[in-house]
Length: 611
Image (cartoon, rainbow, N blue to C red; front, side, top):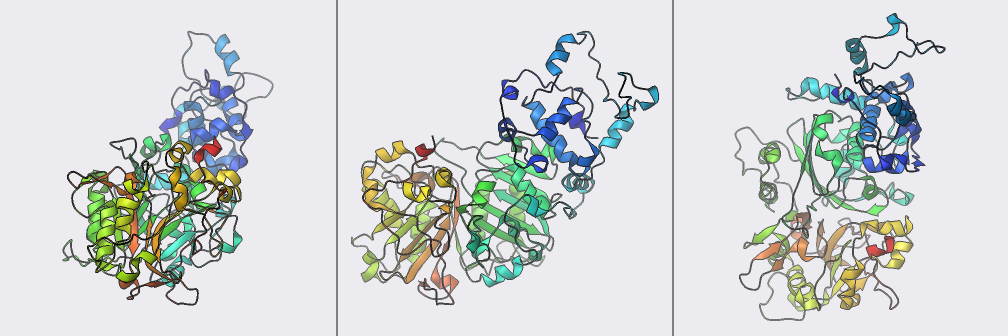
């Protein structure tokens, strides 16, 4: 029984319901459940149902919407519960109703005589039979939920094939059953960049990827998955799982940006569990973007990404992902520490997950312990809130790894610039040496066999879009929506202009796709080689990487972040990564190298331009 439709519902007394709205361009195909969407856009097919709704019992949904029934019920409940629409005639009816009469009324049968207000006795359905008829769910999303209820005490949750077309809802349609082959071809890096909707040249690139490809059946049948992220649009994310046939599979979500849709999602979708990660300080964010995809054969894959889980981040923005090879299940007699990689990836991942202290993660930590990570060739580099005295987190983790494995010749280190590319910039103080060219630059430019004596620091080139870069983007000024650097912050550090370089990405056809990606590398003076590559969620900020307390040496971090560090010795068994297009071992970095410095009349993009 669908209990959500049995409540007495009041659709009156809301100023939001009276505002003039633009009609949703998706029309009857709209799948959104976000209250903000219904506050902004009208949906005539939903409003017509509400106009004919008596206020109790079930919605009278036309037969032509039978394949969308459950989705429409969820949408109607959002509109009603948030008072986002006043049904025609409801205000007048409220004034003339007998105040003594409060008994719920049954929706009248559609075969009622059109010329009378009375209904024949035989045409009035019984409450129970009416409700039983209404819980027949033909839509696959609903069937997925229904199937999940049947098997929630069982280990196996079935695939629920979609009947609607992916192409009716999304502009870029990836080929089906091709991702395993594409993934194998991406070795040894396994690096991908998001397909850009308005740049068709990117659609066929071997290193371009859509979210739907992460769930491609060629990779194996998904059993369950963990999504750790900052911003999550539940409607968009669940639509992705629906089209992959995984609407009944267990999904766990950790998120950091308040979302009403996720707060009680388990009541509507029993197979989905969401947990909001609270932060100790308003300056800290749960900013990690990571997935753990567990398969029916006992294996798993890890995805470390820079993209939030909502539509904008996967359309016209440059994002990066590391999509691990499959980590098979270990033999039953194996110990939890077995199956470790030379990079100690498994230990680092378990350390990161355990920092949450959440029972919701127990299943996934157990799965990680039971899998073989011995072939993983990258280092996990994470940040977690708190004061750290070890070298396991943030910028000291980066510095420690580079100190052991970065092979730039010591005599040349001052000629290898650090390229720090980000989508936001922190507040660093009145002068760069307080953090940017101090702790930050010092740790990100450490090398193996480096003398302890003071040496000339490496040049710092900070790649961040200018106002002009954003103006020329696919989305115009709206392309700057993913670049939250504030004018007030920049006004306090005008010296930053000397370090700024433009976003140019002609080589990968992403010049007009503004970067939400964050990446760090050091390149040779001739721009042909790279000493390392760090792909991460962490922007250039103290909150992300930490600042060192000069008194006790503790590293103070405010945010959760996660990234992967590529070091040549572990990935290609060489000292440096080739950046040349002719090399079979070429490392693809999304922006142009060398970067282009800001001209004297340029200014960095600030979020205030959208105010």
